[in-house]
Image (cartoon, rainbow, N blue to C red):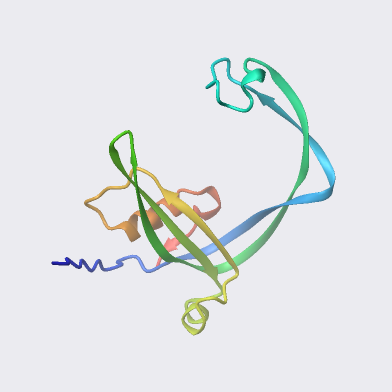
Length: 151
């Protein structure tokens, strides 16, 4: 027997102004990164010999690009649940994808015609509450999405 549960998505999207920032890595410029290794490490860790030390390494320079959008329609496109067994305990991870569109009409016309696309993970979710609502509520906690409103 297969049980099917249909959950209504009461919060269909978020709307408002945002600044979307992406990070690229320079192919020519570098920057210093300081790495501090913990005193206690597993002997199988490839960095085991560096335990308790600090080193400076060169990494590609991060380049931040920001774009401001007005009246963005932010939509959770999908939610996936991944189940693993860790230390004989069942662990469920919720992973979701979201995208920003010029408008609801743009999204309805072509779900892949988005301004930006990203993903997130929902930790410690409530099994008794709507997953869609929890994803949208988590997105609104982000500083760059704080001004978005339910629509």
